[in-house]
Image 1: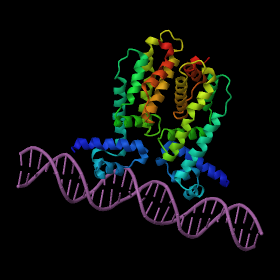
Image 2 (image 1 turned 90 degrees about the vertical axis):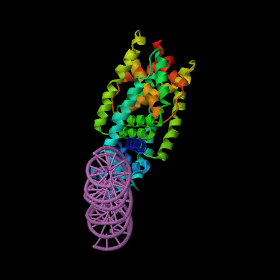
Image 3 (image 1 turned 180 degrees about the horizontal axis):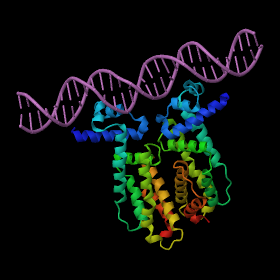
Image 4 (image 1 turned 30 degrees about the vertical axis):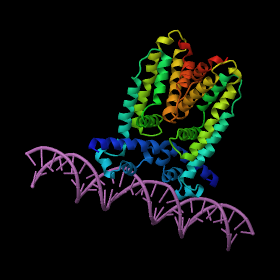
Length: 186
Length: 186
DNA sequence: TCCTTATTTTAACGTTCGTTAGAATTATAG
DNA sequence: CTATAATTCTAACGAACGTTAAAATAAGGA
């Protein structure tokens, strides 16, 4: 195992542990045990426990959601959102765990205030983005902002079902629910 | 402070700490400090840390959601669900924290497998209950189950907004979103 | 080969944790 | 007033924690 491989492997195992046991429930010793290296190796590659946790959120999580957000082209909006959610089923195990950890921080169930403020900033960009996507097809709808808000709320639960509760959501079911909210959108 | 008062006060402070710092991040010493009693007093009233946590979920949380579920009468369904969600804004601080802790366990962000299986059992009762409530007004709708599922998903996010993220949701906004999903329900 | 640098280890540091033993205090009943 | 029971405390136990010092090993260029 080369040096950079080991650094990546440490983060991989750390993601598993932070996910399963939270920040406080995770110990450097247990990470080292699963990586099969000695304890101070973690400190050779990462300054301390907090830096390891922060790097996962700041780097891996935000890269993941940025990548996810720019992955699809929009033709039909129902189809767009259906494929977006459905695709989450097939994220790698690592990406799912990173995503789950991010949601945990987003809900302020873990992490500190610095990470929370990053999440707040990101959250503010959600409604405008979807507003823009839905604007063309909601031109003649009176309660436009309510529809956007409802859709975003619905998406949030479906994301949590797949990522946090680790359930499989069928494409048909996803499409049905999105279509109900976007009924006024044809 | 009488004996039973102290026992209740310990649980009250414990709820705050478990909420703010999670199970592993909470220490018996810090609880005792905030209660203003000595450390072993916690052990006088509760066998150990886990029993204290379990009691909050098993007793307080499940009592709370049972009470909430049976609080309202159904006349108009949109009104029913609107008032149900809107009422969450005005739960006591303690009840909100207990609720938040329960959701954390429900999402398996905290607690152990025993508590998780209690949550699974409870979750199974959600769809049937709302199916029954919505059945009368969805008689002539073809995708009945999808509407119920969508509503439950929507409710879940709104609950999380109020309870977990500690936001205030206005009655009008709640009603708008519920009405969008239950449009086929008049 | 030798010297320098990068990687990895053993061993320990001081701190805090959950938990308990056992004594001191307070309340209660006879 | 006294004896029993309920409550509360001081003090400590062993274990585990995050972190580091310092030595050992491996790698790579001169």
